Image 1 (cartoon, rainbow, N blue to C red):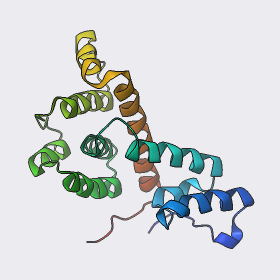
Image 2 (tube, rainbow, N blue to C red):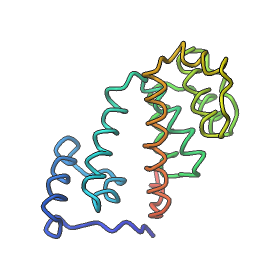
Image 3 (cartoon, rainbow, N blue to C red):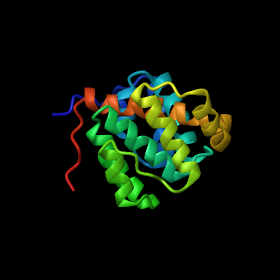
Image 4 (cartoon, rainbow, N blue to C red):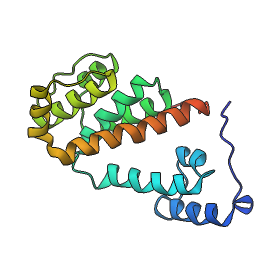
Length: 175
């Protein structure tokens, strides 16, 4: 059973109400991680800015974002996030073979140089490997410093999402 403690709108502080209204204005509902973060309204507001940027305005393609999310969800055994983003990767056009490889901890051998650089960089970070200077230079040549910064923050953001779902025992929706 989920440990999420939802706050009824009438029980929210003024700051929580403001953030709740901002969160629901664009989406019509509050996404599950924000049900955790709304207990700290400043955190919820900051995470919304970061999440919206990463998913809608970053230099990374939707496919690249989904590849990173699958990697980090797999690392944290975040089944809720993994399930949602396997679907997202499929919708973005990531091949089934690549999804299966990533989920299985195997290099998916991505043909697109940008996607491959994102995968190499993210998987090295997640596994705790320090990239050699030569490897870092190769990743930097493809992603630039902007892409490097965005992959780092994307992994941090979705680490928080995956851990929030695990800690709060949010079940994977039945399909």
